[in-house]
Image (cartoon, helix red, strand yellow):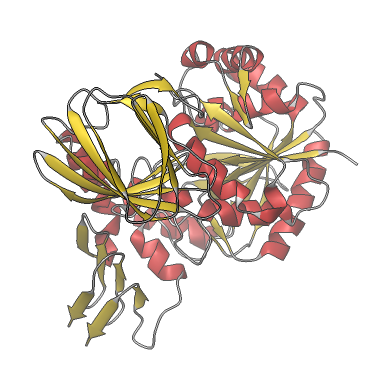
Length: 468
């Protein structure tokens, strides 16, 4: 029986789901369809497969700790590796790096590539389709999963089937008229971005069609280093790799590509309209999430995270509130939200990058209020975790313990603080706090000073290997 290495690609930002999805908290980490994130549902799906090796997740440096936290929360996924990409280089280098890492001891291994941000409702059929794909991969094919189309969709790429299972061509996202022709022909699939192949076959084909990517990523793995459960690819070597998608770099060129039909209840949830389509609706066709009241509204998606949202007389509309931003749009134009994100990025507004709540390896903080010379945060530190030993040049800090016990370093002193106790940290003084207890530590931090940016942090010691 051949070994199967599942690889979850967990990079990307999913800008079309703003304001929920942000650069530092992308789509795959969101709970969009239940109590688990899309990444966690993918991990759960993989755990249901038989004959698989410990999971591998490929992720960017900025998302590594929250990714680790979400993977560790899944009971079946305690044995895993997180492969860190020090630079962004699209899917071809990411997959190539994963294959090189997996094939260090056995190039006959079968690699199963799965995006982290897709919804698949039929897990049994998914397992059966994987079994079919693995058999073809063992025989030397590079297998792509083609989703049976249910409508003339213009937001997906397409795969044209040739004789048998052979792939005749890959098609870019079409206009509506072309998509209708594809659907009528019965010979096209949606391109899911899922693949299966042997490491040997993949490496041979990459050497033939994308040797610069293959050689650079082989060096990135050979020169990479372990950091706990993380394996960090070598940044200099990866930077030398061309940035290209796996479709352009390999799939459109190889003659070993085959497609398996996959009717899985699949969606890539690439827009708010796509989320509305796959979500449970009330009798008026509304998808309501959070503290929401609607009157006389039909076929809407209304989501509230922090405050009450009321909607009256809306039809086919989208309303999303996240505390620091509100999006209002016709559902049919929800794809255009990426243009809003582009403007936010161009104007250097923080709303494209972070939420009010920011996740760190030790826990999280939420910005409660922000003014030119002061800022108030609620900070949560997980049991046994601690912040870096650090200093600020431009701000003073007041800490008040709300719940739990904190071990405080304030200059030359180290002491414990309990509920309702506080301390003051002047600018220029080294400090740290940690949670020695077994419950979450919650505290309020009041910052004041001439500059309150997160880049005014000088780290002297850090448990998590972040830059000093």
